Amino acid sequence: MIEGCRALVRGEDGDAALVLVLGGPPARTFLDGQPHVDDYWLRVWGLRGLLWVWSPVAIPELRVALTDPAWRVREMALKVAARNRVEDVVEVAAPLQSDPVARVRQQSHRYLMQVVADGT
Image 1 (cartoon, rainbow, N blue to C red):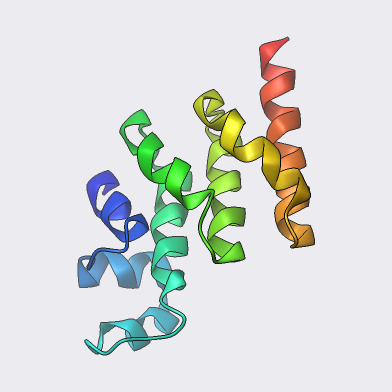
Image 2 (cartoon, helix red, strand yellow; image 1 turned 90 degrees about the vertical axis):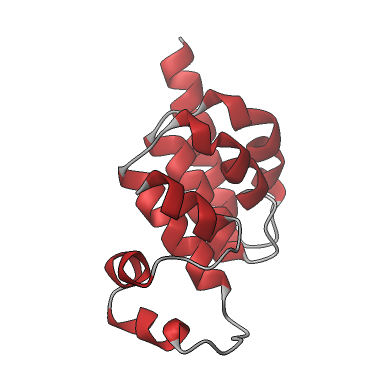
């Protein structure tokens, strides 16, 4: 599960069954073998899996996801970092408090508050 999610976050082709489990019915669209302009959803769904099944081996993918051009990916990466109390990405997550997208800014704040609260 973790390796499959990491692959999706890296933008690699994922296992069709895993994509369907993580993305639900809308994921079928991405299994047609065609390029899609909104393929960032695969990265979001990979992160969704890591939200619930976390391992520190995914920290490199989490770091990259925090700088993703798609705001939904950045937002989900922050949720993963907060839920799993991943302190190793603070330096990448902190600048997202100035992200152009309000939802990312809010999630960055929540993440940092979680990490600070745990660190006290």
